[in-house]
Length: 74
Image 1 (tube, rainbow, N blue to C red):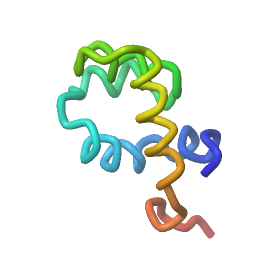
Image 2 (cartoon, rainbow, N blue to C red):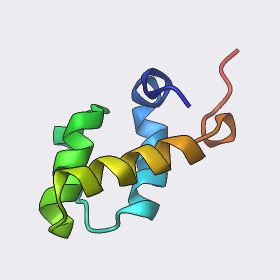
Image 3 (cartoon, helix red, strand yellow):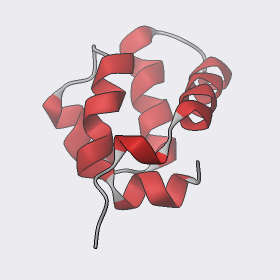
């Protein structure tokens, strides 16, 4: 899925992100604001992984994202 779609639906995507990375806080989500690089940075910080590992995790998650995660808009 295109990250622009995820960013545009960030409020809905947060639940799926929380399922994947439960250590992220509400404050983290406010700071991430749907920005991919911020998400990778917070994963790196909270989980103590390298930037490359965090980026790979985000990419893998992004690849699994699908339209069913988001409300359909008329």
